[in-house]
Length: 121
Image 1: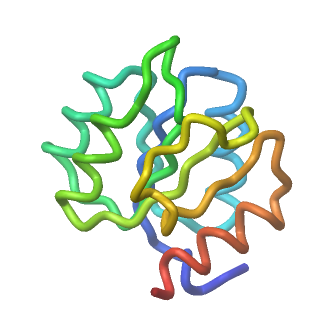
Image 2: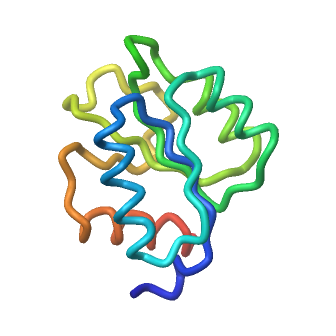
């Protein structure tokens, strides 16, 4: 288990429930203290306002809506995040080149590596 991830609080912004459950299991295995899931832009923005997180995982597309507003809120808070996407990266916003991208489907090892890199910055 990675000590860097032990006790961390992660916000998972994802609209596919099965993917949320898979990510929750992976993060629990990594020792994360809490995982908060948000399936909509409004719920994600409310969670960012109400809670403190160490990192976030952001689906680029939430129920057909672009998640740029959420990316802006995370950036404004200085909260490190990773994009999770099933697409090939087209539609990536200019200026988001420094945001890591985790392509779905991803493995436990890929998730561990990207979060470790994100949290050790």
